[in-house]
Image (cartoon, rainbow, N blue to C red; front, side, top):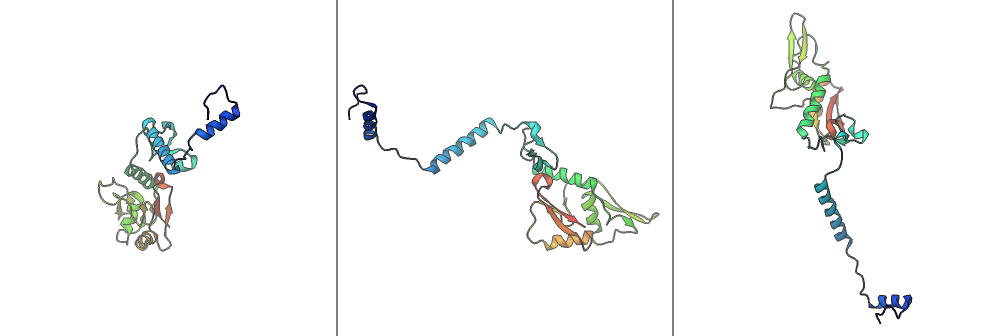
Length: 197
């Protein structure tokens, strides 16, 4: 096949190129995908996610409004799971009602009475009996640094398929009709199982 570009027409040049060029071998798709994945990973590490700090959401409905979870990024820093748990429990204790613990008479000896009080107001809570009024009240106190933080079968994360002990504790705290209800979006997506009467 002659290589002179001046002596050959376009058709003959095309035939010449086809006959003299080696066959093109396609690379395996897996190798190409690996290179693309590695390139994207390095680009993310080098330049970051590019998500501005004002898109970080602290509200419980973050999953609904499309903002980035604060567990992923908060002011450029990764927030810890323990901090998210603490914030969630503090909000829970601030609005908790203890109808089963508060009431007339001395309710301190009742089965699971103290545990239900801690479920409502936190691990530092105590049942206080006022003899003059003949009334028992669940009182909030600062939580201790160590020890359990959830009670009455409540827990963070995905619940086990069967949890007979948790169900028993829930009924003991809040009555025979009480059940454990799981919310996968609670606590910034960690999930939380509550004892509901």
